[in-house]
Image (cartoon, rainbow, N blue to C red; front, side, top):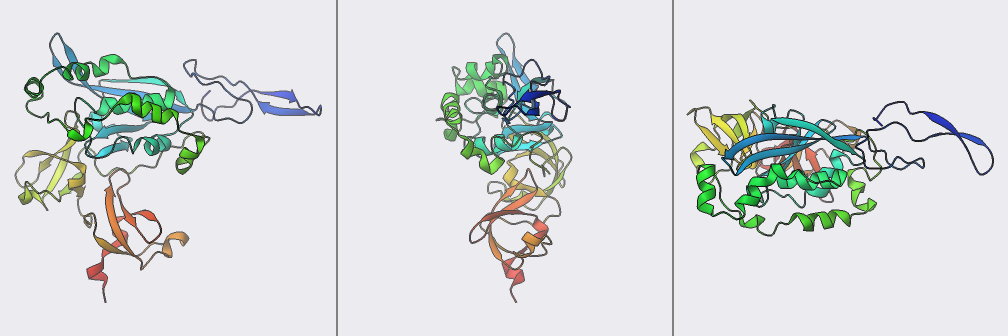
Length: 341
């Protein structure tokens, strides 16, 4: 059954003897493991795909892959800065080595983001213990009840038995063990997902949110995007410099960008990059909201908020007000110092 397709309708007789028209047993993909329901239960109409790109190979042993999951064409992948999503297959430079259908799910991309965000937080990426394939594996389990093919994570299983020195040899020194990933276990995450109820999904549209519920992404980090470097402590001279995104590095989960002034390609965490020309706010900064035009937003104009973080997937700042959090564009924020009369 494809979302939006016209289903065959058959008369079904109610207990009172009245003839009703109800949607029953429409045609759907054979690989969809969820039963179609005639009683209004969610339809499995969110298309799930897997994208994979080869990173490097150890001859005779294994090949390293970067993978991501797509829901209705929206890519979701795990990086050193948490979960990212866009529609340009940015993590594969737009051209994955493989891309294929996995199945159809009742769950949406918005729900995927919401339930996995707590398990794949920024700063917890590790090439061997907790990487993009770990995320894809758990995502497929949540969406379809299936697992990532073993060939995509063969190197990780091998790496868990290898020394750090050997791993550095094959990654050209890019592998650094991350203590934040030591406690990660896919089985524990899947048990937590199994325990979720409908109430746990309400913030993402609920378990019955139906078809086409993918989040509206407006990613700040895409191939060729112009950015400004901020917040570096070990290389402060780069702060304020302009750069251009070259690619996403699936080995260390970071973004590589060519610095304008030197032409060098450097590796950055997402939180150290902002869209070029945008007003920059550091986490913890106070700002005043202005120029919101919607009926619900205009009541916030003049309010002072605290910046929590930059949301690269939607190109907005997450800010905290007295009783809620909002995602606002940089153009609708002004430093409190400048706003003071």
